[in-house]
Structures are given as structure tokens and as C-alpha cells.
Image (cartoon, rainbow, N blue to C red; front, side, top):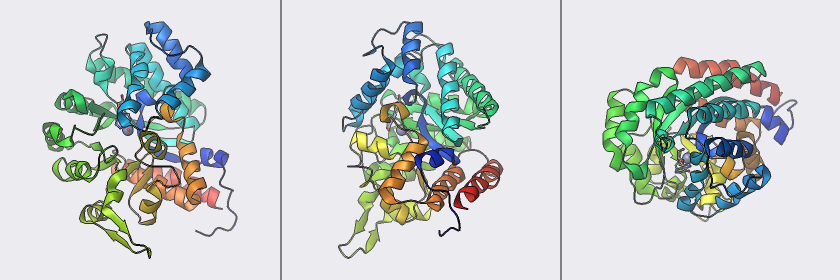
Length: 366
Ligand SMILES: O=c1[nH]cnc2c1ncn2[C@H]1C[C@H](O)[C@@H](CO)O1
Ligand SMILES: [Zn+2]
């Protein structure tokens, strides 16, 4: 990791570095001003304030509860304004632009279509509108000299039991940019095995899926997600540390599940700021990402919900630089880990690694 003439690692240079994002919720990343404008346009009356700066602070504070269930309550306001095709196109386009401006070159953005049908939008219409928005945002980003590619993941909400229907929706739209499936929502009380029919269907369709697991609930959730459901990646997966023991003398013991996750290179979609807010980790400095990175799990760095956490892909990476002293080689490693773990084709992943990520970091490493 020694370098001849590296560019200093600062928030600005980290922002300029190529990054890859696998775990970012569309309804958790709206611009505060957009929430307010859309609330006005669609007639949503329940926003806590009409001032963008105050709203930004409100989301962050309200999500800072130490509980996943209360954290999730804040999404009522974002989903509340995402109930028309125009709103969905706009939110998706701005998402692509914002990620591109932060240096993201490839992102998988997820959302639950069932949450946007309160006013009667059909699920297929919702997916088409979001895809249209991403294409518009990609085009604008390209014009601004920040090309980005966005793949979409469709989530089913654990508490709603509509996962097979959403899995079928994802497969129906696989040729227009939907690259995978996920289940989200409250974890405790809603084990991933409640959705086995959806996962079975996806496997039969050779489709990809990840599962939020090991965030608000521990090892049984991770074990079920991998061994019963067949998840290719873990959303968060942070509680895998419960299966790792560190002796006082520093000797490290991996349990069978932790070994399996590491040996099979199962990607961990880690979201440090979100985990601190929901109580899954005490602080960034004490976040298990430090240990898991040291042990060379397939760690990736993600935002989860940029609005609720007041973060961006680059701020999340910079926070890790501050906490753990990571250098460009580490940041490149996270980025390549993420790109290797994406749900697009092998040839496309390789092209982004070789043509964009490696040359980008080579310039920074010096
Ligand atoms: O970190 C999370 N865990 C579980 N569910 C989540 C998380 N972040 C967002 N969600 C939920 C709230 C959104 O409305 C939904 C789809 O994006 O996914
Ligand atoms: Zn999430």
C-alpha cells in the first residue's frame, strides 16, 4: 500500500474517486427541497415543516432513534409524496444525478413498488416511471461529464407478504434495468423464510437477490437468508460479528457461519451511519466493518438512506478513513468488492473495474 506520490485522502478527493454503491434506497435519498415541492404538487399534508433545511435536520434527528422500527417510520413522508408517475420520474432522475455528482460510477438503487400504489398506481407503471427517471438522470449526468449506470432492485416489504408478486414484477422488468430483488422492512418477527416461494421462483428464473439480514436481528436471520433462502448478498449482515470471537491476546476465532460467509465471499452491504442510527452499531469507530475488513470478508460500503443519515457515498467512505485510517488502496478494495458483487453481467462488471475504477485509483495512488 506504499505509494510514490499519492493524492491526499480528503473529503474532496474521496468525492472525486470512482465509487460503487450496492445498497441505497430510492425513498431514503430524496432532496429535502424536492420532498417539499412534491408534497405541494401531490397534495400531501403531513410534512413536519415546509423549510428544506429544517426538514433535512428533522429526517436525520427522527431517524436517530436507536430502533429500526422507529427509523422506518420516517419513510411515511417520502413515500407519501412518491405517489404519482411524475414524482417517481423526478425522484429517480435526481437520485442518479446526486450519486453521479458524488463520484458514483455504478449504483444499485432499491425501492418497494408496493409503497407507491396508495393512490392507485399500478405496480408495472411504478417500475416503468422509476426506470424512466433513472434513464433521464443518467443522461443528465453524462452531459455534466459524470457518467453513471444505475441498476434497480425491487424490494418486497417483509410485513406485507407480497413477495412473490414483487419477485414476478422484478423478473418481468429484468430487461429494462431491474437487476435484482430484496426484502426490506422490520426484521424482528419477520424471518426471511416467510418469503420462500419468492426466493424459489427467483432461483428458477436465474434471477438475483439480496436480503436485508443481520441488522436488527442476529445470526439466525443471516443463516436463514443464506442457507434457506439462497441470498447472494447480505443487506447489512453486520451481526455476523456475533459469530466471531476475539481473545484478549488478539487471537480471532470464526464460527461456522462466519467462516462460510467469508469463504464463499458473500458480499456484505455495510451501511455504517444507518447502523449507528438504528442501534446496530455503537459508533462508526466501533463498527464491525473495521474487524470484518481486517479479516477480509467481502465488505462493501453503502449509504442505505442518504436523507435519513445525512450522508453520501463519499461521506460514508470519509468517515471510515477518519475512524480506521484507510488509504486509497483500501478504498479501491471496497469499490472493487462492490463492483465484483453487482448483479449485472460479468463482462460489464469487468469493464467497469478495468476501464474506470482501476485507472481512477491509479491516478490517486500516484
Ligand atoms: O436498513 C433498512 N432495513 C430494513 N428496511 C429498510 C432499511 N432502510 C430502508 N428500509 C425500508 C424502508 C423503505 O420504505 C423500504 C424500501 O426502500 O425499505
Ligand atoms: Zn437498507
